[in-house]
Image 1 (tube, rainbow, N blue to C red):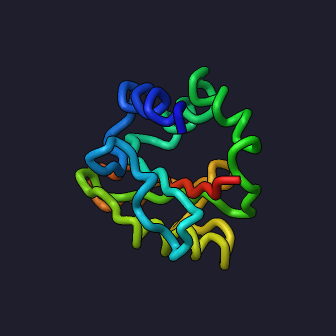
Image 2: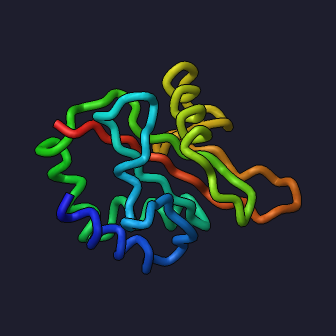
Amino acid sequence: MALLEPVNAVADRSPGFVWRLQTEEGNATSIPVLGDDRLIVNMSVWESIDLLAEFVYRSGDHLAVMRRRREWFERMKVFMALWWVPAGHHPTVAEAEERLEHLRAHGPTEFAFTFRQRFSAPDAGRAPQLDDALLGCPA
């Protein structure tokens, strides 16, 4: 938990970052998710999947934490879902829960997908942005 604030600060300054879910405390760890008080949610919106991937997999600060995540979190089969949102939309935890459950039940689709199996942004004359929701279960 001590690393959450500095990593969030790096995300906030990263190219492509748009928004992240947070309370007045500056994070989302106290927001209930999936009816399980052991779970925490981390949700953000990015301009593109490539810019999000750059932060997740190439940012030294974030990558260092990700490499040690098994020290702090139990292993979960599906813990992250990606999906496209209209520009300016701030998704809710309920949306994230629906997308994650859909991904668990159906695998990657245009509705909810992963870095490994991506889907292009919808072409509806709008500027879509990528939302990601990450759930963690503290060990």
